Amino acid sequence: MKLLRIGPAGAERPAALDGDGVPRDLSGLVPDIDGTLLADAAALTRIRRALAEGNLPALDATGPRLGPPLGRIGKIVCVGLNYRDHAAETGQPLPDEPVLFLKAPDTVVGPHDTVLVPRGSVKTDWEVELAVVIGATARYLQTREQALAAVAGYAVSHDVSERAFMLERGGQWDKGKNCETFNPLGPWLVTADEVPDPQALRLRLWVNGELRQDGSTADQVFPVAEVVRYVSRFMVLRPGDVINTGTPAGVAHGQPCPKPFLRAGDVVELEVAGLGRQRQRFEAA
Image (cartoon, rainbow, N blue to C red; front, side, top):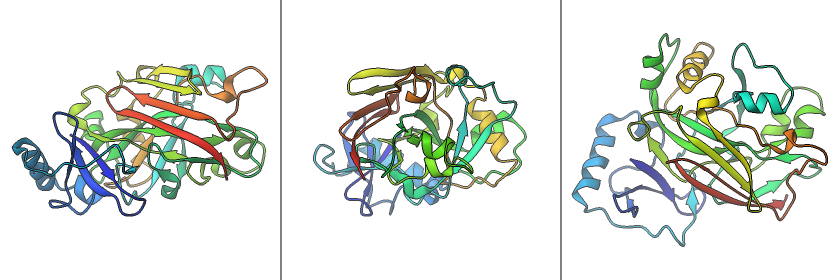
């Protein structure tokens, strides 16, 4: 299934795409698309049955805002330097273990919402990523099979970063990762049964129409199953948590000087094969 949320920020209605790509209103079946729903197999079965029967009312996806496809996110765990080509372009060695950091859930906005360039920013950067959405409580997982069984689905994530805040202002990366609007998510949450191989997905990103990133999850240093297993060794993963699994080569930080960092007025578009497409205009905070 492709699950989504439509409406004003804070008042989105749960929906699912039917076989023709029309969003169907789920508000008569479930209150929202969140961790509680993803952990409820019976509720997901009801949604599938209702979609098959074709009796759900249609929603207009062309006018109303498309919100992030997941509400009430618990935590966002991010993986740094998880693509071989991205590590190479930034001149860093491949990590021996996944590099983890956290991003606040309140950075999440809809896939087409405006992204704000922070005050004082000179190095705002783009990063197209595969997001893994957790659907079952996971702690101390042992195997690849256990890890994938904990995955509810996948989504497109834009892990926007401010490199100067991250790398030149002391401390950890948090200052450059948690700025307002710095994690557009969506358009859909695609359930895991529709993504048979998360290591065979193409990721692309354009800035003002110019292709900047074109990679594949096959290039990940640590594949999805290993990332989920590894993270569960250090923290409990719960339904509704999200893992941003890293970005391929092509970010502004990896380009020759003068590096083409984002400015107000720029437009970024990004997609992951089978998971949909985002478009954001950047404006000054």
